[in-house]
Length: 331
Ligand SMILES: Cc1cc2nc3c(=O)[nH]c(=O)nc-3n(C[C@H](O)[C@H](O)[C@H](O)COP(=O)(O)OP(=O)(O)OC[C@H]3O[C@@H](n4cnc5c(N)ncnc54)[C@H](O)[C@@H]3O)c2cc1C
Image 1 (cartoon, helix red, strand yellow):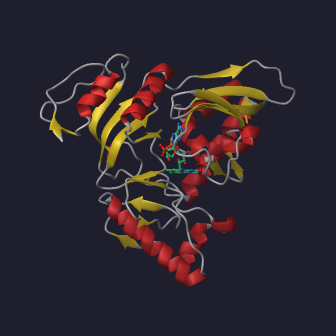
Image 2 (cartoon, protein in one colour):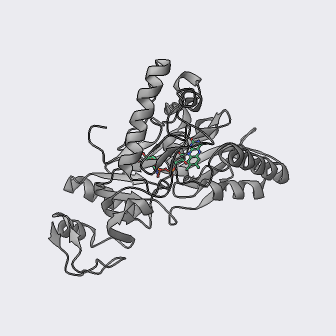
């Protein structure tokens, strides 16, 4: 670790006397000529994830443009530094010891959306940048009378995160309405991939951690704005009724094995309300692990392990996490 000398350029200043990784100076040098975005050293992951737990990422960067992002990715490759992209952090659990390397956050500067006027008999194409929240896309679609994405109402993620996770609910998933994705690879090169060229699966786009979704084009249908809005309201009401909607969580913690609801298996194992430290199996929906306010990432992982053991013993089924675990060794 080295101690920064209060360098201040291209975004946030680095606080004096902050302990920085050994590669900090080379990293800043690499970014010097192109970077204008924000940059936070020792960035608390509890602030960037909906579980509100986790240690610090060495540095979190918030690029302002595709060019900047591409140059950053190329530089990180040259420096051989590990990095990971996130959106709204609503499906990640970060270890208490944090994340070594660079966290790339696609946020407000990756938020534009537009209707593409390509004449298609059945569909209307809508292009959305990865940092846009699903809630924002949905309200834009409702206003414009574009139907197809209503099933994501109430999912608190970004378009990039939802594309990478192939997010789904109410019997539908993102791949059902996916036309194409613009993907940035490790070399910072952009490629347009059509739905036919991809192999999305249950809660995965199957492109590997090296790939970044920067823009997704959805194929939607014309619909009545009021009906679309009413359907979204109805779905959110159902979520509030059945899920601990406002609790600190990442939604469903485990994947449903072969279509069997994981929540049912957890409930049958007698675990509703079961608690480890500040982490609890929700009383409302057994597949939600919630942070009651004092949970650490270690509490959540201990609870996860306990649930897996008990479900395996009771039903012979192995539960796999849907939430992405970051920064853990041998979990
Ligand atoms: C209350 C609640 C309800 C939820 N309900 C649902 C639900 O019904 N259905 C469902 O599927 N999910 C649900 N989720 C989980 C989560 O909201 C979704 O998976 C969402 O799509 C994640 O988006 P994000 O931007 O938060 O992704 P993040 O949590 O930031 O990242 C998730 C993963 O995607 C990767 N990623 C993020 N952005 C990109 C990108 N641009 N390119 C490539 N990879 C990327 C990350 O590296 C990470 O591996 C729920 C979560 C909560 C808190």
